[in-house]
Amino acid sequence: MNEKFPQDLLNDTRIHMYLPTFAGDYSGVASALFELDGTIIFHDPAGCTGNFVGYDEPRAYSSHARVFTSALDDMQALFGRDDLFVEASAHTQEAVGGRFVAIIGSPNPMILGTDLKALGKELQRKIHTPVLAFETTGTRYYDYGVSLAMLKLARDLVFPNPKPRSQKQRHTKSVNLLGATPLDLLNNENVQAIKDILEDAGWAIESCWCMGSSLDELAEAQNAACNVVLTRSGHDVAAWMNQALGIPYIDGSLSGEKPVQRFLRNLEMVAEGKPAEQGPEATGGHDRALVIGEQVLAHSIRQSLIEDMGFAKVETATFFDWDQPLSEGDHGTISELQALDLAGSGNYDLVVGDGLLQPYVSEGTAFVEVPHAAVSSRLSWDKHLCPYGTSFLKLVDHAFVKKSAS
Image (tube, rainbow, N blue to C red; front, side):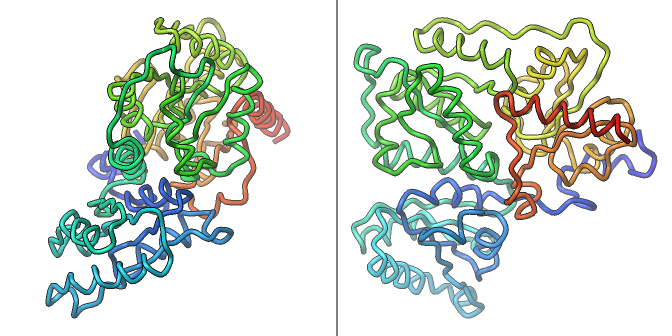
């Protein structure tokens, strides 16, 4: 244990001393809804809205999405003038005509005890347009918000009266991609890399939740033979679709070469209702690696390092929620200081993570940057480093060449 970090601080996931604070739950909701032709209204004094469009949403400057703030002021807060919010929201929706309205909470209405669900019902009666109310507070991270938004989209808007389809009614060799937002996948190039892997193997993409698909295209999700969960945020909606629509699901393992081939075999089996085969454990070799990142991607990278690169041990960790059982090599959810302590320990030949971690990696350890916009915000927006397919192997090769040169 690095002695410069006191134990009580080391384990506290709320402490940020070296890295910026991460994207909040309200940004996760707005990111998931961003491309769906709705009216997004943050109930806040404008700070959280500014965080989202200025630092968490790389699409904000090149789109025509409807993102607004209620501009909650002291007088509204003191006198509880919720009627002003409802009136302004109704006028806004009338002017811009979104297909739905999303009300997104922030720390201010949380402290005031504002009933956002009640405001949503009142607004819906006024405008006769679907209203989705999200009681986000800014006290949880983006992944919770993305999960919340996708589940509410599916349950309340896209499939309000779900009817399971038989395997014969679904399109064979077709999939939905679940859990896609720039906060994890960064850009459309990475989404396209995933689509290319699947389409080259003969799979059609019914919908992508929620990058590159319209609200109408999301409704085609019921026709898919299987769901592919790209990030931890897609687990809840995948489980709901499995129960409500009868669509099986599988976590994506899309990094490297050998794990991708096994994933494609598993995808066929899961779509047919058969169990998937497990990936091999590490055998031989001596290199050790640490992967800090989004949970599903971290697992995918681990399998590539083991199967394609021959690593003997690969440990994975995340700053965010971990909702799968811990297996060997998993640290689960860790704090910022735990991450820096691990990265600088000198116990690894390779560390994989967001670029903000690189200065804290011990000398002599190779580093592969996998940008995570929820961590490094707009510092990552213009980076083009793909962790999917064989592109990931090129990143690892480059990291070790760079290490040897130094």
